[in-house]
Amino acid sequence: MHNITDEVLGKVGEKQTPTTDRGVTVTWMGVHWLTGVCHLPADHVWEVLSKHMWGLIFEDSVSGIWTYQYKAVERRSKAFLAWSDHQPGKPDEERLDVVVNLPGEACEMLGTQGLLDLVRELGLQVTRLDLAWDTDVFSPREVFDTWKAGNHVSHVKKKPKWIEEEHDTCYIGSRSAQNARMVRFYNRRGPTRVELELHKKRADIMWKVLDEMPLEDWSTAGLHYLVDFVDFRDRSADLNIGRCPRLDWWDVFTAGASRLSLPIPRKSPDLESQEKWLQDGVATTLALVADSRRDATAYVLELLKLGRLNMKPHHDALLAVVLAQAAD
Image 1: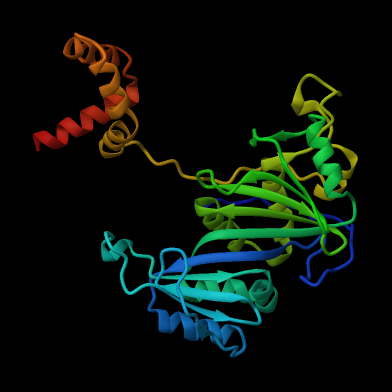
Image 2: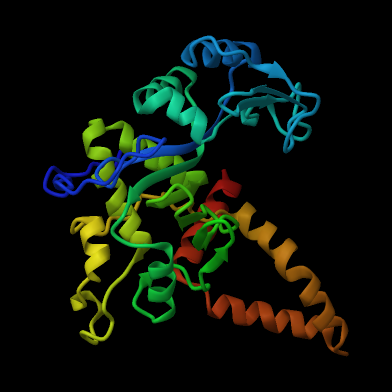
């Protein structure tokens, strides 16, 4: 598992902002949302959730949610669990029988240690994790205007989304991408709330990273991964972005946090996935182009010849493995 050194995990500092109803400050990161899945029976998950949430009552809902047939809701905390008798097309070992959804109210009720205990007891695979800080150092408008001015470093290519209704909100990133992540800046409760929202593998790995360290180091660790996703720097200071200083307000908030990337494992390509990609993404276009030519067969053979010439070492290695398996 990924280890973060004591040197990187220096204390955030003495900066302090007012505590909100979520118990989150600029020096203390809170968990604002957690969703996870497990293979345990629904009635057992129901019992464990009720125990950890001080006996609050989960009530049957009239309908399911997402792809699940059934749902039980705890009205006060807005927590719910959902499950199905079966999931068509999936073998038993791949079924994720119960989903546990804990929004901000439920996370506040459980507290960070309570969330840790619950995830451990249920063996949850975390699929969504929102980490939150509050600060009065900057506003959502400053974030949006800074991005528009080009003073940012980020994996995100799309422009931020700005919403100005009862409060100001700036969204950077997307939930729709593979292993999606997004950060929100909004001021609904007064101070600027900063929420880093992680999904799928990123959420689960981030949780495992946090689970390895003392609670007092969580905020610092979260800031390291936040600035890996988005960083605000004075791009006019130097042609080399690495030498551009952080903007003052962002430097105060992040307390000099260095960039750290989550150790997301990359799946090695296999022949099955290559065939699926060929069928789903290439076959229709290939048929269209080939059928538009008189020499369709010769055209396809020429493409195969070109493909073999362009094969890289990892293609050769995969082919060697497949041929060796066939020979056995």
